[in-house]
Image 1 (cartoon, rainbow, N blue to C red):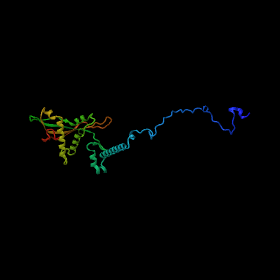
Image 2: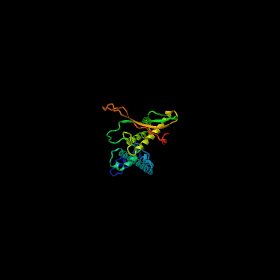
Image 3: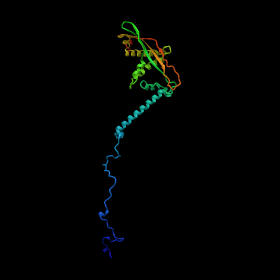
Image 4: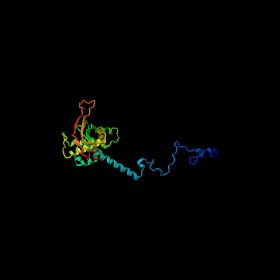
Amino acid sequence: MDAYDEGSDARHGPDAPSRPAPPEERGAPAESADPVEPSRPAGAYPLGEPPTGVAALSLRYRIAVALALAVVAVGVCVHLGMTFLHVAPANTVTKAHGKAVDDWIYPEFEQNWKLFAPNPLQQNISIQVRAGIRGPDGMTSTTGWYDLSAEDGRAIDGNLLPSHTQQNELRRAWDFYVATHDAENRPVGLRGSLSESYLRRIMVLRLDRDDAVRAATGGGGVIERVQVRSRTSNVPPPRWSREKVSTTPSYRELPWWEIPQDEAAGGVR
């Protein structure tokens, strides 16, 4: 039997050319299991996902943001450095640049503490004042003691933004007076009379604010003199401490000060 009798199933020799399989026998191409992501237009996001935050800004605005952050960082570093030099013990830097440090700190950033303080303040000091008031009938009466420190404390308590005056004016005026007077209330140095005038004017202004004249005379009148005193009491130690301190307050009374005529109606403003 020759090859022509074997039909289409006849085997070809090694040299016979192979015939391509019909299309129906090749089978359809296998479908991919993963969905095909639609193609993204060329040039839409050349670097991947769209930028966010500062990176989304233009170059000009990014430079402005960087400069602003740099200025803030420098300001914070300078402030921290000045505060550290202010509260640190005396050193070569503070001796050479002490005025620059004080100009930066006072009065807004004053610190009432020192680094390595051997004995922090453990006392409560309140400043009180009373006045001699001459009424319309010419008679002079003396008021009771006004606790000005307690008034400032009530104004600060619960106040999110207390004023610098409420926090420091009275305390600084008293510290100024004590530093320029001896135990006998005699001025020491040229600033003694200045501290007296400063403290006296504050007292008259505070009495005028408290309407002391009207409270004493029921009407018109004038402040003729004032007297200031301090009330000092020790802070009680904690319960777990064995330290024993006296909590009995002590007083330091200053002499009566006559009020000049230009201050008598409420002080110089």
